[in-house]
Length: 166
Image (cartoon, rainbow, N blue to C red; front, side, top):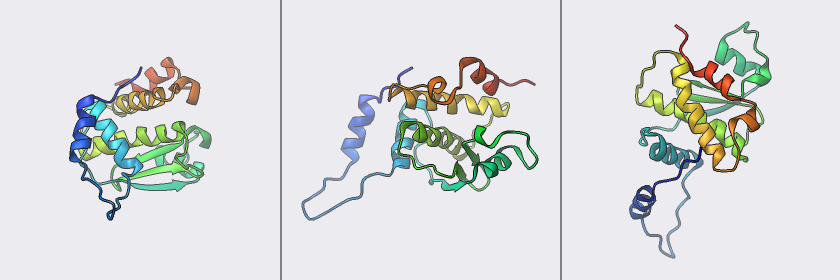
């Protein structure tokens, strides 16, 4: 599934940009700003938010953050987690954001950050994951990739991860 940036969003960004003169330099928008703009334009999420804290931690720590101490999940199965309370995105040690796949992980977690910032409520954790996976897959699609070929997340696994079972 490909998501295209709407022409109106591009025009709005260009119109809002301040002209740069030869004596004035501006920093380019951060990757987080770019992701937020893309998510707001394509997934009806808020765009005006405080950025999250980004922290890299060992894979074993990610399992504890995501599932709690003593979880029987292999450390390689968790590549990121979001903590609503501290508004922190935890990424696995070695994450650089230099590939579409790594950036897609940040896109996924930014969806959770924007959901939390908008105080969105969900029937279950799986319902919250549905939009995050959809956005991640759309981001990967921009680069000719998808969740299945990149992360081994097939449609059946995705269904189990995003359905409410109660």
